[in-house]
Image 1 (cartoon, rainbow, N blue to C red):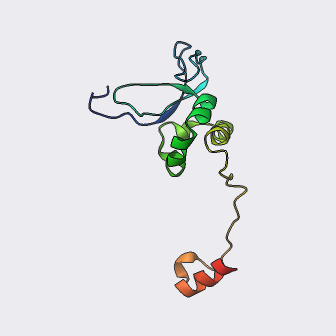
Image 2: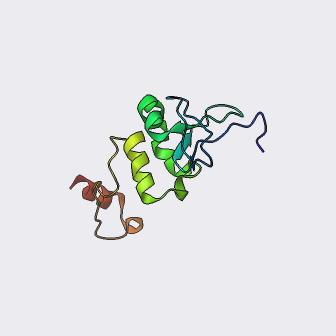
Length: 122
């Protein structure tokens, strides 16, 4: 149970029933459909469709990019659900597969600052 003065954390969850409704479009969220609670209120749950929240609150979402692994329920999502959420919430962030990989000649812990700067300048 949540205490009244305790703030809820953002979370992803599959709908347990079809009784919840989206706070943006006001339509029901179907059972087992992925939904999101931004956790922006005290003792209040406000569920959203992934599509609706991503479209409506784009500015707020950029604050979550670095913290997405800390959002409750993120680690339980399947890879396809994670990519769906990433496309809706963070459309301009590149996938990990599209990001360039840095290949260093030796372990980063054993490199000097000068060597690392030279590698990054390449």
